[in-house]
Amino acid sequence: MENKYAFISYQTNDIDDAYWVKKVLIENGINCWMAPDSIPGGSSYADEIDDAINNCTVFVLVLSEQTQHSKWVKKELDRAINTGKLVLPFMIENIQLEKAFNFYLTDVQRYSAFESKVSAVEKMVKHIQAVMGVSSENPSQASTVVLPSEEKKHENSSPKAEEKKTSEDVSKKDETKNEDLNLQSLYKDAKGAIDKAKKSKFAGFVYKFTPYNKEESSDSKIRYALNCATIGWGLAAAYHILLSLFSNIIVLLLVIAASFAIWHVLFVLCKKVANIEKSYKLLAPVICGVVSFFGTHLILGIVQGILR
Image (cartoon, rainbow, N blue to C red; front, side, top):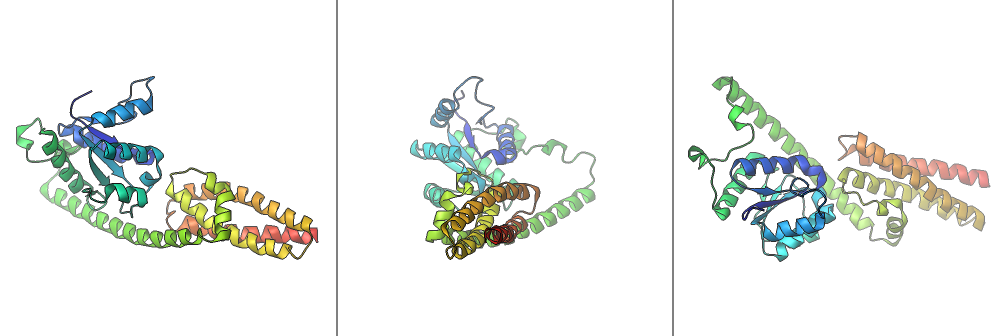
């Protein structure tokens, strides 16, 4: 293993961004260590990752919303901090850091790739080169950062065409950025309301005993869809359970059993909706919440009608 290299930590769903960062670093003379590519066949992942962090010069963290729910990334970051490594968060999403990550990264310089991926990686590359004392192999590129496919960028293109393309790219990026910021703001409000609701006794009970709590998914689209589904199901189930209190104990028990049976079905359906609906940040949670409420209400109403 090389004496100086960057350890790249990432969550599985962000692997494309992680590979892009790795390619940029390598093309600029920076050696990298990244799982699973750098792990020899048959070796222990835990041992190899621990050794790689202990011996790395810098720790590059590809940071997104999903990253904060990865147990492996948390362990890697904790190890890097405890061994005094230089941690460089490369933020590919505009997110609010959760407690653990906010604690680790409070005084750490971050690179806002969600604003400009190219600008962020250029700054990070120059920082790493300065720390490692390395530079580009080509002297003419010593003051610039080589990006993937940069060599092909100007082939068969006129200055006017290149200028038009750049203008269109900037416009698209601005539109995407504004859309993402609006959705992020809406999402944070929804997440805050859900977190607040979990503190109530009933919601806490539901959260503890539903299959959702047992689902260790780092996929945010599934997580938020299930949050909304839980609220919808919980409201309808609570209503019918309260009605059943005025009936006999058998009706009450059957309604409770039916409620949890319905949730298991909703659990599967909501994951499918979240995976199908690409604009999940708004539409999938709404669909899951509404369907869960009315579906639970209808089925439990039929169950109670039959038992009476």
